[in-house]
Image (cartoon, rainbow, N blue to C red; front, side):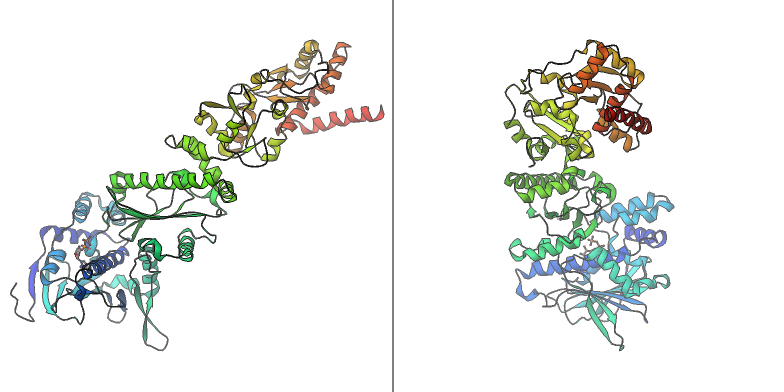
Length: 621
Ligand code: ADP
């Protein structure tokens, strides 16, 4: 170009730019604040570029206080964004700001032209629109730039209506100033509180300092830091202290605890990304009420994009942190996030890394891991249910309460303690650990030294069936396993003569009628007289859980099992053989079994009256 010094050259926008500008300016009014995200991202990129070029050419070195300055001039209705970046030459200004070089922007333009008018506002939230977003808030824009390594500066100016001018200009140092002559309805973007909140939202982790010029009470102004400033994850690990990691974790997780584990790595190869992830040290108080999706922050070149990219499976949703990639465009759309193989690859790699971390920690089998498990085990077990890919691995490190001891156990440990001839991993589900420990369902297993896993989290009602088996050992509820008991000898006192059930069982069935599905003798009890159970379909604990969660279940009468060695059953049997009625006793017996099981009583008053009557009888006897 041979412009006469001082004179403006007039250029036409390329046809594409013209159309895009038209659309941006006329069709989109919501989410206008993203103009600042786009301009600050450009400024940060330019500064990165200069730092990079200075590696090989020291004369391009950045000034010591390099950064991005935002200056609102309320009176003049101007907003200025300045950087110390690499700058643009005359030709670069014409090329970069006068044509569309970027495929993402072109795609956006195409999408936008074909979208219905009412859908357009939401599109802008999904796409970045680059530099042209400035025209959403500005009537005209002046870009003054001096390329690093050059003395020349040029000003690019446009009102976004078909053409731009390039005018020779001056700038004391290399870098770029963008002056937005704000529209009348864009006053809000001259307010420092508004600007600050936008910066915090979109650019908090831009690694360059961003300052915002604010008026002081005495009428002077001051450039104040507006971003936290450090894309901590971009620094080498050796330069980051434990305190800095903790501080960052607290910031991103809005938490106050110390992270249990910190994972910070840079992946190269087919996909390049940096991740800084944390396993929390404490469970957020409302954790179980929070949404089920992972909230890992996705950044593209330090710019926050979204926390809804589902970078981890739902059962890892307790993991906090950031993934930052070079391999996506800054204007990545929601549709693109769902479709891009880049994200799928990142997701896979990040999931694997977190899984490895948890597995390694689990191997240490220390208090730290147990505490972690107490915090998040209930969520991790959701993976046993819904993550077919990792189900067996999760089963490998999962921890369980057990009848063996008060310590948590792994399935491998359980298997190492299995009795000769035992082929099944037994478990019992219920509402809480204490009730489980006291459950009559366990008696026959305890008496035979058969260990039982005690499962009291809501999800425990679901996953055992899906997991099916671990190391070829089937998992089965003790409720459905009493048939196995016959295979194992017990220490029970064989000198006790069992009651004759031949008449008692029909008598009980007769007395209880519709209230029970069946009555039968059992070997599963040692201490208790009776137990209720169900057959086929969900067991009783599961049925309670389902009812509590609002599911309508048909009322199915339970099966009453009786212990022929128990004195009460023996006494009842004698009564029956003497021809005496056992009607009231039978009803109390069934209710006792219900109480023992944690089932609600269908008629508590009736039960109380019957029991009082029986007690009165025995007290006066
Ligand atoms: P993108 O940044 O995605 O490439 P933009 O429309 O925002 O698209 O910008 C177009 C180009 O203009 C950039 O790629 C960059 O080369 C140049 N540019 C924009 N802002 C600046 C700046 N502040 N300093 C130097 N170059 C810039």
